[in-house]
Amino acid sequence: MLNKIFGVISLGCDKNRVDAERLMGEIVRRGCTITDDIRRAQIIVVNTCAFLSAAREESINAVLEANAERGGALEKIVVTGCLPQKFIKELYPALTEADVFLGVEDVSELFPALERAYAGERVNAVGCGRAVGAKRYVSTPPHLKYLKIADGCFNHCTYCLIPKIRGRYVSYPMEELVEEARSLGETQELTLVAQDTTRYGEDGGKNLFAVLIRRLSALENIRHIRLLYCYPEAIGDDLIAELKNNPKLLKYLDIPLQHSEDSILKRMGRRGSRAEYLTLFKKLRAAVPEIAIRSTFIAGFPGETEEEHKALLSFLEEANLENCGFFAYSREPDTPAYNLSGQVHPSTKKRWVRELYERQAQISAAKLQKFAGRTLSVLCDGIDEERQCFVGRAYFQAYEIDGNTFFTAPKAEEGKIYKVHIDRAETYDLIGHTVEE
Image 1 (cartoon, rainbow, N blue to C red):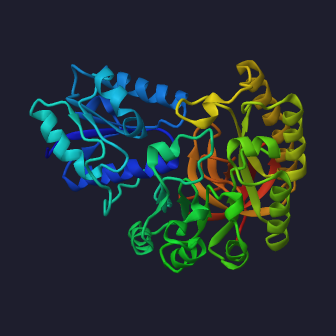
Image 2 (tube, one colour):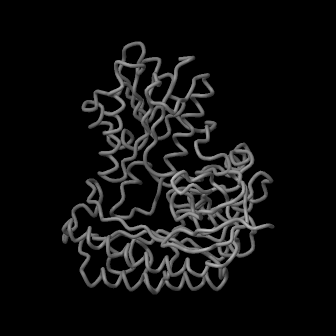
Image 3 (cartoon, rainbow, N blue to C red):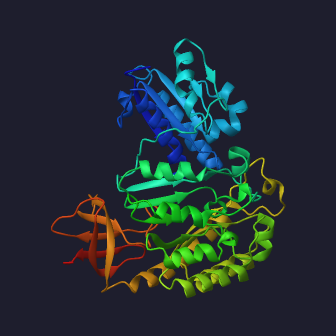
């Protein structure tokens, strides 16, 4: 397998990105090359997502598009990740374009499976390998890295396939996470991810999320830490204290709520309530006045009424969040919600999503207006070719999730922090220029 050229296509979330980085780390460790030009690749690895039907379709299309490279440099296609992990029985006989199938943890099996494929075998190695100890090949800008602290989930929301794809929640050993974070080198922003970051340690009997944050904060190579996927019912006083007192922890929380109305939350299998969510936001803002909170919501869950949709619109006004993502409910086979009565018409779901985005756009724009005329610390992510200026993010802007801060400067370096005077605010973005320190 030495001297082979690999192309890697990774689909889905940032958690999937970390899985792909482990595969790429194994590729580099074996002495092979990774190319960004898929036409040069002798082996194409497609790291798939299977969370929603649209994601599964995108994954299949990516494999078919990769297969179109046959006749050129391409020799083998590897399909890995969530899609084969969950649907290998259907996938193996149908997706004949693939030479090798691997699951979400099968890093160690990549090269043995390829050896078999080059010997003429079509290989199903799902569940045969392991990812423990796999070194990563970081695919993000050098100053920005992700740390996946757990896999799986035990929340069992009725619309979600994750527990059936990834299994029960498993926290990665703390010492291994600390060592992995140390091995990532100089990092301006380390983003912690998992299906539910706030449950870290609970599979062992005790929540250790705040302890892990403190251990990571003690590393000299880590400048700032950002938290994603923090479930509301697990945000306790110890985490709030870290947000208040830990200078390395960015004053930012991503809290997926999915809805505001109690009847829908109950049908979703969610544990919170509208009143509890609003109380949590009040508590967070009292302890950390500058905190930025974003969330995600599902529109058109089975049984949702026009009145409940309007109640969610009013909740957005009351919650006054910095940013939100909205998604139409996707009816997924093998989930409890699939068989619920009251399925909402697709056109209604589409309208509700549009109305939710319109309402949140007004809220987000109003919140950004308060920064006009102020000077903010902005982490430079590079150059925006379209706007012909530098692009970066303030603490309330997560990478590839929230808006950006675009700024002009005599010069700026990727990964450095600059003082930027904000000249104006748009709906989700800020526009400004650097000022002297």
